[in-house]
Length: 75
Image 1 (cartoon, rainbow, N blue to C red):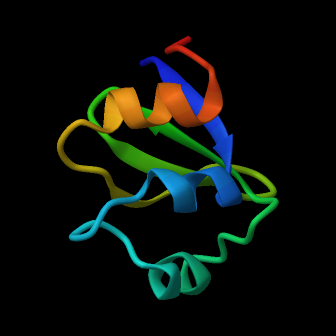
Image 2 (cartoon, helix red, strand yellow; image 1 turned 90 degrees about the vertical axis):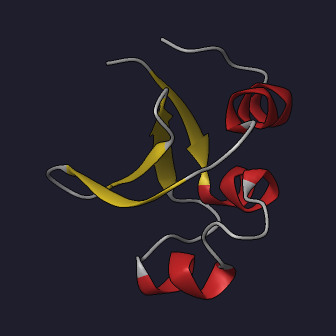
């Protein structure tokens, strides 16, 4: 599966209305410096000490939002 990694701070920029909220990120343990990744289906995972944990998903034109915000492409 291919992903784009980003920080919690970048994820806050990418998120649109109707997707996760800041309170959802806080409840999931995602802070500004957390490492998260998004796959091509829009699933968001946060890096834990020993695994990746799914915390939600993105909708719509998220691919372009992620590439514009991070400058990265799917790897």
